[in-house]
Image (cartoon, rainbow, N blue to C red; front, side, top):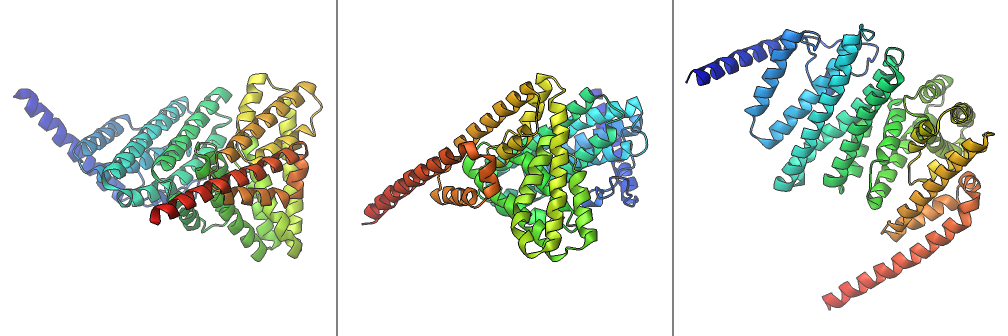
Length: 442
């Protein structure tokens, strides 16, 4: 009996503490920092006044969250609560690093918060899957909108946070933080591939459009999309995802075409130049954007100027990567090559551009091996595309891109023959299915 009374007292005290904390948070106005666009309001949370640096207060804040989660039984509300707590965890990271990122205690908190954030997002994913299984697509629709919106904001925040901490933490510590960031994106990618395969294309396009009030945000979207695309396994799903990337690129280039002032061009050039991501992804974004700029610049001389700027960025990026590859260990080279692990020819062409500038035989050999692996990934991709129309689109795309054909010159005939054979096989299969259905109807 005494234990029951003690438990009730603890619960009561904790709930009172939680209400006090919530009241304090509700009185707080949204502040900004050097990560200014990442605000509490943008995450639909109150700006926290109790931070992990306040051990006593934060203990009771966490305890209150545990209790609130434990007494929330509705699956959708529970998933919503986990998402809210994940947003609070990541925003607390922003707050504690605004002025004290050099403090070793703060750095330790940053590492722990990264892990806690991922655990909460894992719970969100698990709950969404169960809700869909029990209640269908409509039950998870709004939750998936919010998770998608948040994940793109989170990834952008993490990239900038890691950049800010580069001088405060060791290279190994930064790598561990980047692994946690990558893990979060992989979990999100696995989630939408499992539960949102029919709606993710439209969902992503809708969320990207809503987020892009500042058109520079399109650059961040393409960066995250390059990273996210590498987490998928289903090749037909990847094709839909690629269409989403192309749609975002279309919006970006259309905006530049319609607003081609010197000021706007310079803003976008600087955004691309300072893109916070690994070398491989950065070069992939440059090539992907420039593919569309090549088409649009014919009718707009300002875009021609932007294309020249983009070429300069690519050359600088390739030169920086060349220096790294000629002076690092095999293990470090493999880390770089993992950022080219894509089934798109963009990775192949980028590696070809890098190889053309190398002089170190060992580095050339390593790049060539990676390039051949990417060709294998591409071959696996096209063999697993079931829709012959998508294969025809890919064939048309390669045929009409002279730069791409030049970059993959030694594979071009082989690819074209393979695509043609696959189109025939897929068409024949579709005709058989159609005939069988007609016979069943008769």
